[in-house]
Length: 440
Image 1 (cartoon, helix red, strand yellow):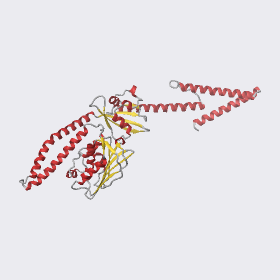
Image 2 (cartoon, helix red, strand yellow):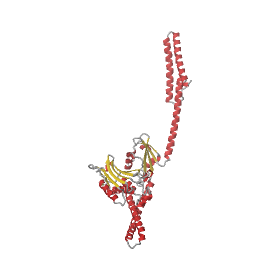
Image 3 (spheres, one colour):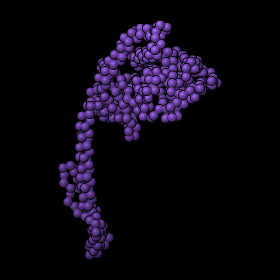
C-alpha cells in the first residue's frame, strides 16, 4: 500500500477513535453528545495547530526546517518539500543556461537584440550595446524605432520582408556602416542581428572609385582605336586578308565601349542610394520606342507583343527608367530565338505599377536566379560573349529600381522562358483615365 493511502487510512482511524473516545467519555459522564462535541473540538484544534505550523513554515522555509508531523499532514509536507527541491533544481539549471547564453552571446562578433511583439527591447548583448549605443538601465523596454531613427531602418522594420539585411550609416561618422537583419520567431517576437560592415563598405567604395576612374581613362584611348579601325575598314588599299581581323577588332572594340559605358552608368548609380524624384513618364510611349529598337535588330523574335493595360504614368527619372527597361528588353531579345515570342506589359493595381518582360528563351536554372543582378555575372558566359553581353545590364536595373523604391522579381523555368517584373510602389503612380489594352 502506498504511503499516501496509509496516511489517509491512519487519519480516518484517528478520527474514528476520537469519535469513539468522545462518545465513551460522554456516556460515562451522562452526556454523550457533550463528550462527542468536546472530542471533535480537540481534534479540530489539533488540525488547526498543524495548519498553522504548515503556514508558518511555508512563509519561512528559506531558513526554517519543515515541521515533524505524521499522518496526512506529514505526507503533505513531504510533497511540498519534494516540489520545492525540484523547483530549486530547475531554477539552478535555468540560471546556468542563462549564464551560458549570456557568455556565448557576449563572445559573438555580432550584436544581438531581442524585441517583443511591440518592438520593445527585451534584451541585448554587449556588442549590440557598443554598436547601437544602448544602455541597459535606460533603453530596456524602449521601442527600437525610438532609438534607431534612420529612415532606411524604419522602412525595413515596417516592410515585413526580412529576407535581406539593410545597411545604414550611423550618426557617429560617415565611414561607420551597420548591417541589420531581423529574424522573426515565437509569437511575434523579433531577433535583430547587427554587424559592423564599415570595412567592407570602404573596400566597396575603393572598388567603385577604381572602376569609375579606370573606365574614364580607358574611354579616350578606346575611342582613338575605334576611329583608326573604322578608317582601316573603309580603306580600299588594305589587303583583303586583313578585312576579317579588322572587322573582328571593330566588333570587340564596340563591345569594350559598351562595357565601359555600362560601367560608367553603374558607377553613377552607385554614388547614391537615395530615392530620386523625377517627372511623369509615359510608359506606353516608352514601350513603343523599345519595340522599335527590338525590330531594328538584325535578328529578333518573330512575335513581339506590347500590352498597355493602364494609362497611368510613372513618376521617376526618365533616362534611368529607359535604361532599366531597355536592358530588360535587350536581354530578352538576345536570348529568345527568332521563332520565339517576346511580350512587354504595363499594368497598375492597388499595390502599384508593374512593368513585365516575358520571353520564350532558354530559361534560367534556379540556382542562378539569386545572383543575376551581380555585376559581370553570366549564366552562360560563352553565349553572353557571342551576343555582346557585358554582364552589367541587370546590375544597372537593380540600382535604378532601388533609386525608385521598386523591386525586381524574376521567374524562370529551364527551357520555358523567363519573366522579369519591375514592381513600383503606389506613390510612384500617377493615375489617368483608363486605357484599353493594346496588342502589337
